[in-house]
Amino acid sequence: MTRREHALMLHDLGLSLVRQRGRRRLVGNTSVNEYDYGVLTIRHWPNRNALDIYFAGRVLSVERWSGTLQVIRYAPGTWEADLREAAKLAA
Image (tube, rainbow, N blue to C red):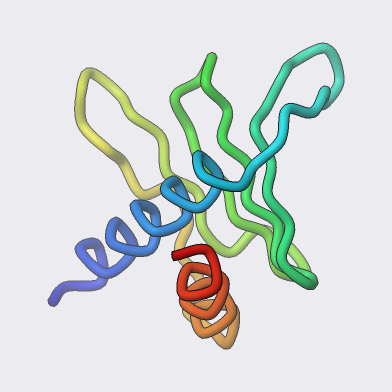
């Protein structure tokens, strides 16, 4: 699995979590769907068709441009285990 494929797999996991367990929140004057698990925060920006995952800073950022998912930022780390754990608990 390439680095991009791995990042997109994490994106899909995060998006699934925020859709299942997330809540609406206002960030500035934009409504986002947000899910928190410990220090892990997942934000889905429907108006931008984007997903960001934070863990002491942004560790994953993916946006859809012209119908294609683009990985903007991917920083591998221990947050990935937290994301998987949160997904197991949500299942």
